[in-house]
Amino acid sequence: MRDAHATLRQVFGFDGFLPHQEPVIQAVLDGRNVLAVLPTGAGKSLTYQLPAVCRGGLTVVISPLKALMRDQVAQMQAIGVRAAGIHSGNSQEVNREAEAALYRGDLTLLYLSPEKATKDFMARRLAEARPGLLVIDEAHCISEWGHDFRPEYMMLGDLRTQLGNIQCIALTATADAATRASIAERLFDGNAEQIVASFDRPNLKLAMTPKNDPTRQITRFVQGFPSQSGIVYCGRRARTEELAEGLRKAGIDAEAYHAGLDDGTRNAAQDRFQTEDGVVIVATNAFGMGIDKPDVRFVAHADLPSSIEAWYQEIGRAGRDGLPAETLTLYGLQDISFRRQQINAGEAHGDHKRVENQKLDAIVGLCEAPTCRRQTLLAYFNETSAPCGHCDLCLGDAPLEEASVEAQKVLSAIWRSGQRYGAKHIIDILRGTVTDRIMERGHDQLRTFGVGADLSVQAWTTLILQMAAAHLIAPDIANYGVLRILERGDDVMRGREPFHRRKPTLVAGKGKKPKAPPPELADLDQDLYENLRKLRTALAKEGDVPAYVVFPDRTLQEMAARQPLTLGQMGELHGIGEKKLERYGSAFLDVISEWVESTV
Image (cartoon, rainbow, N blue to C red; front, side, top):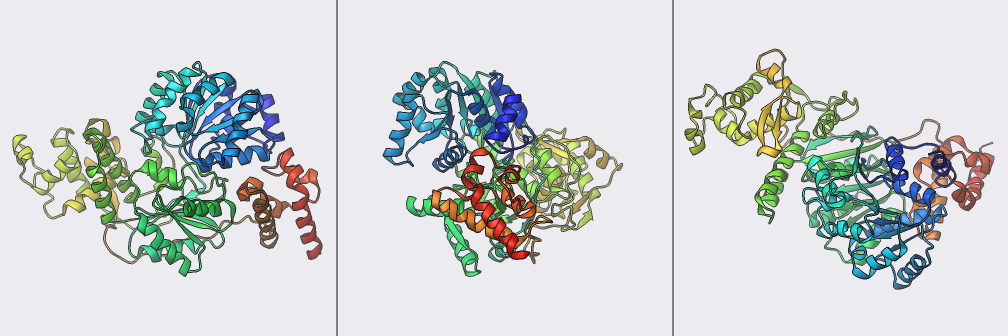
């Protein structure tokens, strides 16, 4: 690891590792197979790029998106690492040059799509090149239980066998226990070291609010980030174009992106987002996986996502540079109904639909959570935390009301029916609904039968979701969503602890303007920072690379705050290695020197 630390500074320009990077890198350097689950923004790419540089030889990276491969190659070449990609997004000339470099043994990193890598001729060529490491990025795609399953990923286990069962590292940002087990079985025959990092992203502010006037709500939120990059997700293709047009009318530089657009339009929108500052992409979930843009300052959802995993990966595209970023998610009853119809009308088998419906319930529970969003989110991934202090609920945006009696009715119905039923049956008991199942089990004779007839199905559903979010009860997803009473729920049921719920929110009402001040550094001179950004944009266009490949926002902000006047001083800044200092250092020093002279 001593060599790794030296390479980290000299080649990549970083003084230290992010949390959870070092154990993964240590495992790779030790030759172990690894399944690593690291949250978006945790620096997954470095966990194989640094070992590839340290060890030499060839590392093959399987990646699902052409844009991701192109950007990763550009980043590596910018710091002097021999990297290439072979995929359909390249010209024939570029692919031929990459294949020639592979044949010559002149590559450190080779990026391939799963479709290209599993072709017989490419598998043979790779076997001849004798790579030392196989990297599977976005590894959740290999599991049908993952939120973005791709059938072609299932062939990668065979590819590893063809390459002589070489060392392999699988990386993903989101994978629950079932998905991790599936990945481990298909890639490693169940034998791999698993490193699962915390899912906490403390630099993200989490906010969720019911829909009122979605276009107005999203517009006001985005206006809080002038000249900043961001992503707005929509559930339907047509909605992306409508909302992008609405944002443009409000003076916001917005582009629509969805799978129904032609390749040229879609690629142009993505290129603008990657290479220019201040562009907002309004997209379906077709956009984003693998997008490696560190300075996204916000992610908004105009419609409710399908699961916490999908939502978490999408909001994780904000603030990857570690600086403050914000999220806003809008939701409504129609969203829930639409998502439910999508699941039930699909072609998946019954068990899969059941799990997807329970995952939808979980994200609705997060939306309706009575207390800290971060606590509820981390509990979903089996983590605990103190209240974050800066989500919308911690900041007091959601008034609470006493609901101990209603919660006790729910808990009593669960207890008296033997903790063997899901939410629908429990609500039937509470509302006194006579069904065949109720009569067969004699639940019409329970003391709780009909005690909640005064509340609607939706009201009880919302309360149960809030109780799950507050850790009073938990649905057993592996057992058909059966509701179990947790320790805190037992305390509430027996009157040892009160329960407060949020006032009903899944109704039409007046929305509040989200608080969205742009992030700033205390000692940063904004005029100098803007001048540095302009230079970065010009250099990025000249080199046909994304702006952050020149320098990320954090580096420019440190320049504006510390104002280095020599190459030595500049080389001490975050993200500036030897190659980037040599390539760009003098140009940025000129801007800083000129600004300093003008202010004397």
